[in-house]
Length: 128
Image 1 (cartoon, helix red, strand yellow):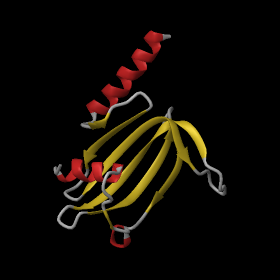
Image 2: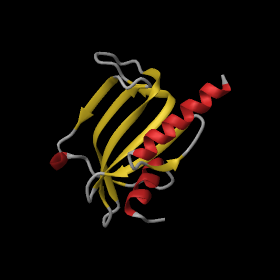
Image 3: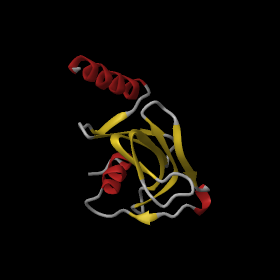
Image 4: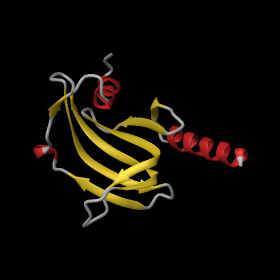
C-alpha cells in the first residue's frame, strides 16, 4: 500500500513538473501549483482528496478526490486579480464542472491580505 501511495505521489509530482508547473504549497491534503499563461494570466492547479464542486442543477456541494484548474487574470500594478475560468476534474481526469468569464467583463477585485489569493498574487507578480 505504501508503495502504491509513493508511486501515485511521484506520478502527480512528475506530471506537474513535466508541464512546467511550479509548486506553491506541497501538502498531504492539498497541493497547489501554478504556471504562467500570458503576461497577465496564470493557471493555478489545486490537487485534493476533498475537491468541492456543485453538480449541475444542484445547490448541494459534492466532494471528490480530484483537482481544479483555475485561470486568473492579474493587474500587478493595482494589486487586483479576477478569475477567468475554473475547471473541476476527478482524480481520473473526468471534467466535472466548468465555467468561464469573458476577460473584458471579469470581476477584478483587490487582493485580500493573508489569503490564498494574496499568495497567488505574490507568486504571479513576484512580490513578497
